[in-house]
Length: 308
Image 1 (tube, rainbow, N blue to C red):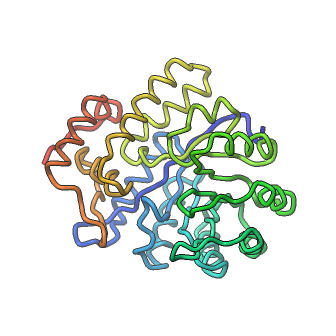
Image 2 (image 1 turned 180 degrees about the vertical axis):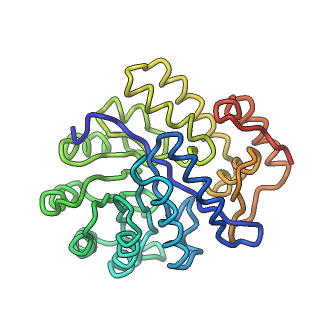
């Protein structure tokens, strides 16, 4: 496989204050928690990172803080947002390169209005971006785009561009995931997007998984992969059962809305949303607090529930 040791990454939120301003102090605290838990992190993303509402200067600041707090301790990467054009994606990768992150994600192209690119357009977009990126990079193939990057395209790009090191693959199709692992697992790291297929994908030979739940429960998320790497499979399944149940608490839709509500009830700083998002109400937060308590997450993370 592309790597013998498995890994997981936090898909990071961005911390804001009550006025919706970037909270740099809270951002330092947040990334420090990720480093202390020993997990890698993708910073400056669209969901749950709210980058669509941020300026390039704010994105640069967030990535700079990520580098300060995590680089050299845990993998420190930039995520970005779904781009309309190769030019937009290249502009983000230049910010990422200048920040000093170790690697950056290249999102699939989003043409907007429900339109989907054809295979030639997909490959042309990715080739145009890859020709400009100097640091290691990871492709995102995400079902939210309404399409997946065809596997032959991924193989051709991996054969041509040495800086392409992995794929973040979000697709409910188990068959497609297995085909990707079998085709590219010896060349690229393969992480599933979200915790839904975490342990299954590891058993099939994937490198690991991404999760937003690690924003409020990094120790729990880290324990899943740590137990797996140690061959402690019973403990890995027990930790995973808690993590996936935490994932299923969310009945409020958007990942960032739910994750920041969890952070709020656990007393973590920077849990405010930026418009157009609105927070979950107090009744919802009390429900979340009760369910997190039942899973033992406050004790695992060394935090106390702060019910509104």
